[in-house]
Image 1 (tube, rainbow, N blue to C red):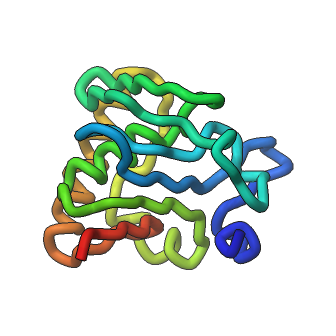
Image 2 (image 1 turned 60 degrees about the vertical axis):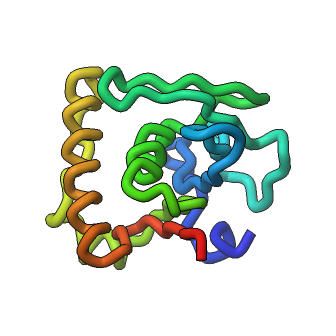
Length: 148
């Protein structure tokens, strides 16, 4: 609710799309709960607004999930972040103009939606995030929570 109130998770009415999402490692290794697609307009969520990612394949750009909603379109990106460090237990993706302006030239942005372009983007994103995470243990516009 606080992320929604701060405008970090929300909805672009002119585009009719939600933005921002939250995930948490759950279940077996490689699995995580993530907000469902197009839930950014909700100021609070419950168990009906999440999907369990049961498997993913970064090379093939495939996500398998179960639950009442399809997983967020950012599920592959969350998977890439979880692959950075097994101690990461949660990921929060927000939209922040201040962070965007500061970091947008440092990492690749998605400009195409073709499957080949998505695979290349996830690889580029993963490489950029791996470098940034290894140096700073932080990612622009992403909050990662690690085990103590």
